[in-house]
Image (cartoon, rainbow, N blue to C red):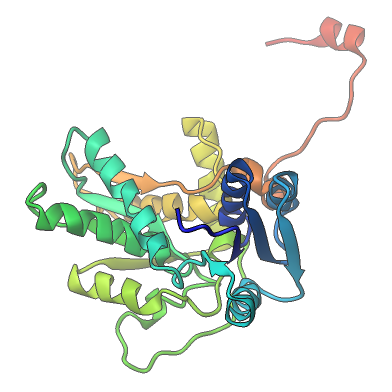
Length: 281
């Protein structure tokens, strides 16, 4: 509609592959800045859609800064989360989906994996819209779940002296040094009495295995962090009987298969005839 032919974004892979696919379907050029260490499955999707990929020797934060610099220098339309306000408007639609799928009601509790705080803010914004329209009577209790090695939102929830530390976690999509939507996310958490939980990488991977084996849902570590937060609160008895609980899973496990390799062991090849002879249920 606006005649935009080129779009740039920074991504650890998920948003980048989605943008690349949309641009391919509309004859637009996508330029995706990614940290060089991003999972190959995600980078493969981006390249297959024909996008220009720029691997940055550094973190997601470095990729973000480069994408903004490209916009400032060349006037390229920037889709970045926390830079382009339309991303919040897009992400808030998940709240409308939850509302509709729960028979036009709101859950009591929602667990959301958080990195830069955009999905968290989008969930809040969607339910805030529903609240202001009078379609729900109260805001759900929303829990921001971060990796212990990348917890720069929740570690600053109860202080005015903000500090940020370098991130290091197996959950690459929520690995962020400087949360670009920090102030909005913190404002929502404060105004609506939200909660923050930090989970270890071991807890994230363990929760992912339990989620897959026990529920048939294979999600990447950045998504299963939310499930790890749910398991922690369940074990602590914080979830009341009969509560309606939503755990938001934001990425397929097929996007980051390297992260779960320590959890699995692929058997050695067998001789078919001998295996059939020896096999017992």
